[in-house]
Length: 551
Image 1: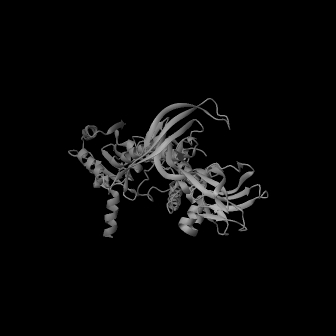
Image 2 (image 1 turned 45 degrees about the horizontal axis):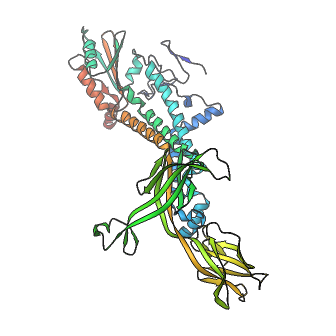
Image 3 (image 1 turned 135 degrees about the vertical axis):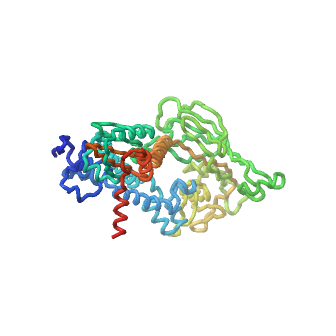
């Protein structure tokens, strides 16, 4: 598309409404039909209003629309609200994270099941939610570029000597007839400088400008929002944002999740210190949560050792570890190292660790034919008791319950309510006998077994729940928020004021424009022309309103 040449000789880009040099209206609209010029971009051409042919043009025009941007924000807010109906996956109990579908259904019924199946339990990390956030960012970028480029061009190239038609259609306008006085504009210039206006002169004409930087406030806002959204989006990049749970049983050494096998943690034991009601001050009773009858929590602590892997990671091989430091993780006293932070978040006392059984003959229960101990976290399939006695573990249900079909099943992989299906082989029963054994249950399929498994002991262990966190996006989000607030202050507390003085013989034209706070601009002009022959500009918008009321 060809550029447009104004009568003053200045060549303007296609789509320009007002000449960038003199301010003449260069489109086909009659000057008299438009009583006030559009000064948002001083008539400069916007790409979205000029080009609409190619696919790129249509995509640009779609995202440059403020309405589209508002609708994207509204849709995202509605979607975000759905994520607050029920707790997100990260906020449900750690014991339920092994089977979240069962948790949502058991806690919230049919709506909870639907909530899980629709993926709302991890809404803020879902692909479609990230697309919405990305679309808002694209809209902000295109909206900003579509407007900031013509604004920059208009402010940079604005002429001093403006055409009379441009001045006459400003909101503040007046004409003054000077009678032989040559000192009025000189006086005006001095007063403008005292008020810290940037004064430019050309051929006896004056352009006084102040607060131009405030026009960039909205675009500084956009930059801050874009950086903020980038900070949100990069959280989905592996290694940038980590918020994971780590359950440590006393004595265990586990890889720290999110460190990709680089760091390991060994738990030396979880400690729970309590206030005894009879021996401690009653002042703690209201402030501390009850743990059990007659005791109040005093301290949660996990004593750990942090290790770093030495050498390359070899799948299946035992890692070689180098000790970094010992630490006692307490509430609000996390272990911090290499941008990682491990917080004391939860605990579980006396979790089942091992269960012992002895094989006995039902007719002579006092005689043990052998004993076995089952590691509830890593059970064996066969246990040889010697002298021809052997026990096979056919089924293991760590958290036993009867499902909807009336069959044994497990809710979780944590041994909260362990149950077993044993097959027992003895010299008298070489074909084996089966029995179902749970806490206070011993069921035989046929009811005529000669032998049975009898419970003989249990070993428990304390479990500490830690939260592993690392957040490199927080700095990006903070920078974006700070830049956004700078833009808010920049656009809210300052305004862009312009005053034109154009001289034609003894006639002086005065026009004024500001993006807001017209009262302050009028006050400035009043004090500037005080003591001169110049006439105070009339507010043509207010004048037309008065005329309309009079009619």
